[in-house]
Length: 111
Image 1 (cartoon, rainbow, N blue to C red):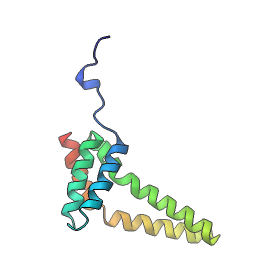
Image 2 (image 1 turned 30 degrees about the vertical axis):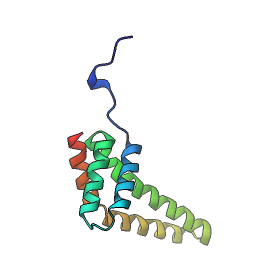
Image 3 (image 1 turned 120 degrees about the vertical axis):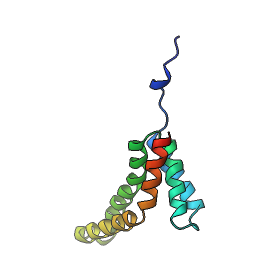
């Protein structure tokens, strides 16, 4: 069976990029800004490209916001409260994601 050219070989996945970003961020939490930048670079390289790296950085925040909205609605029985809780959780994540996005951009370009 002939081998595929190197251009057709997948370089990474969004899921592996997300997991690496989470793990490195967790280990380097004590370095504000720099830890998230390093986590973004590693995750962007593991994701395999610029678009995949940026998606791997943003997707957990969206999932967290949706999960928070669902749980708040289920526990309170008030959809408006769930919506507000979900939007506030998403806002908190997006406020902290700057260095992670820059790192994902750099790591995706290096991949």
